[in-house]
Amino acid sequence: MQELLGATARTDHPGLRVPANPNLLNAHGTLHGGVVVAVAEHAATRHQDTEGMHLSALNTTFLRPAHGELTVEVRDTHRGRTLSVLEVAIADATRRSCAVSTATYRRREILR
Image (cartoon, rainbow, N blue to C red; front, side):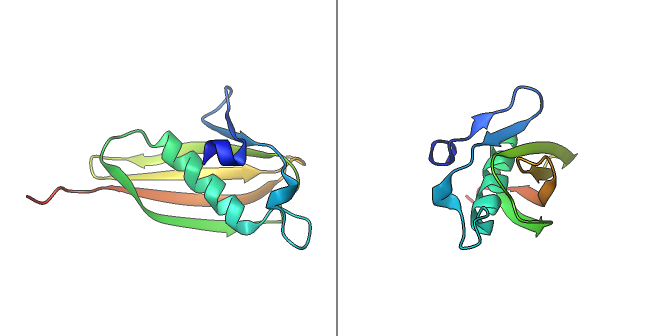
């Protein structure tokens, strides 16, 4: 996914930078909402490094249309033995917030 989006890891905060790509725009000339959600999921999953934890919920709130390069920051809200919650903040080239996602990860138990 990272290669498909052209994303690179940020060095100043946990997260990603995603360059503008005209192939990912909607009919209004802004970044397609599905791409914004995919970026949020990818950034959260990349940040979530605990083995055995799997995404169980992703809630994205769109604040405004996204224009140009995206800057993505990820932070832990809760990290426990069986449940982790991450917040993903996405800003566009104008440095204005365009979306916020909450990603919930749950440990998947192996049935024997």
